[in-house]
Length: 243
Picture 1 (cartoon, rainbow, N blue to C red):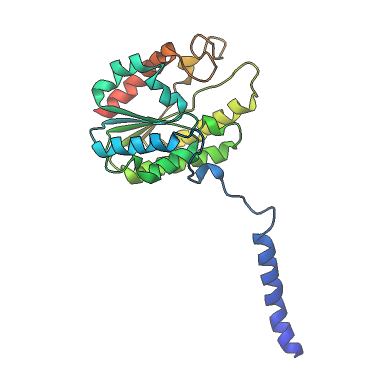
Picture 2: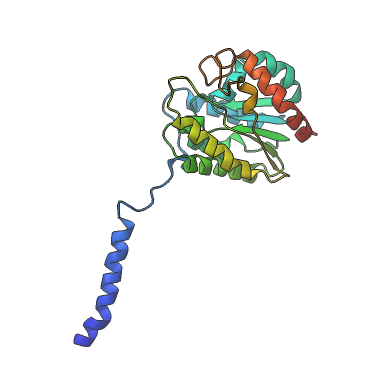
């Protein structure tokens, strides 16, 4: 009996320790920025997603923009610039205001890229995560989106944009610190072939290194002049990628 206890006791202790470790409050938590989820607010979010899926099924998309409100607003504040630069190139806009990395992941995994093969996909996402997620969490979210795009559209080149600056005078400076760290990390996704990273943030900054209301009235979303600056700064790289 004593010999049996000598053999069994170490196994019992090891099992108990394992159970304790897996349920420990110090165990690594799942990164919410990489878990695909839908949005219940706004109520038309799912309808817009379904509209994008329908558009994808119709085809004829050579250039695709994917992102949040900054991309979404090409339809409004940037519409004149869009008509000049992108409409003739059979471009589509799959941006939805308020989206975070996890929402774009859900949209990708639920049909928005099925059956299409754009020449270039322009991606910018992550600013809406910057108030609650760490730079590593956001970076992992962007990295997963890029991986999902590569899987869904292996022939498409990805123009990955740095997250735009946001520095409202009374804002928490931590957000820009997070954004800068994300941009530094996702820049490494540039492989010189299928993924190109482009940081055009200096185009939006004044001589003092800060945003100004004449370009981004709310210090986050460009006005029409801001969208023109975006198009001008991106054009040399985009044109080369579309060849």
